[in-house]
Length: 263
Ligand SMILES: Nc1ncnc2c1ncn2[C@@H]1O[C@H](COP(=O)(O)OP(=O)(O)OP(=O)(O)O)[C@@H](O)[C@H]1O
Image (tube, rainbow, N blue to C red; front, side, top):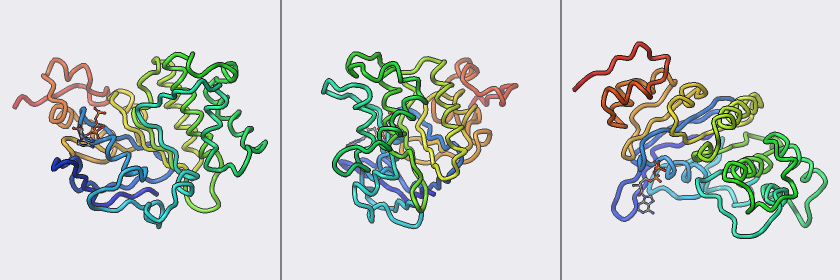
């Protein structure tokens, strides 16, 4: 369980997040949504222990995130941020191996390399293993980073959960790989010790795959709960400020027939 309680974040006198509390348990697809600037990435960075809030607590199981060393946290929590550029000409398999660094003492073991091969196979990367990472397309690079973060938390810890935090993971993927990636996450969630939280913009994909949605707007929580309860026409209109013609195109299908209030 990853539990955030009373999270407030203030930068340069701007309140980026105000009193956000949420609990993300294993085995379910947790999606964070909201318009640009709502505070989604900030919340994910705080959840990942990469940014300290002005107030509030982040608990991994029964341990505050502040109790973990950097290496200890990295062994159980992998985070994929929006920008993933690398400046060095590394081979694809070397980039994936970087995910194992928190576990490696000295040189990578055969087990480390096997985990990387298995993570690469999950994203069809075997044929790209020897390619220069910098020569890949945007979508191929994104798949390499999926393999890297999954390799990081490939094995279950002795106690507690593994945590995968993904900030807009679908950005560079075509529709085929978007759906395939979300399906793979669903399969991974059958491993009952895995907590997955993803920031997404696509309402249809969220409506299809989310078990739980947290909707943010201007740093505040608008709603939290099942996709049916959160992704309603009223909430979507409130936070995205679409007119009735546009909102009809983005409302998830389970809300058909569409009814939008004109206030
Ligand atoms: N260090 C900072 N100093 C001041 N403002 C910041 C800082 N970091 C983020 N912000 C602001 O906080 C707000 C929330 O940013 P955040 O990146 O969390 O939004 P987001 O919901 O992830 O947006 P997007 O969908 O565009 O990625 C934005 O207005 C951003 O400009």
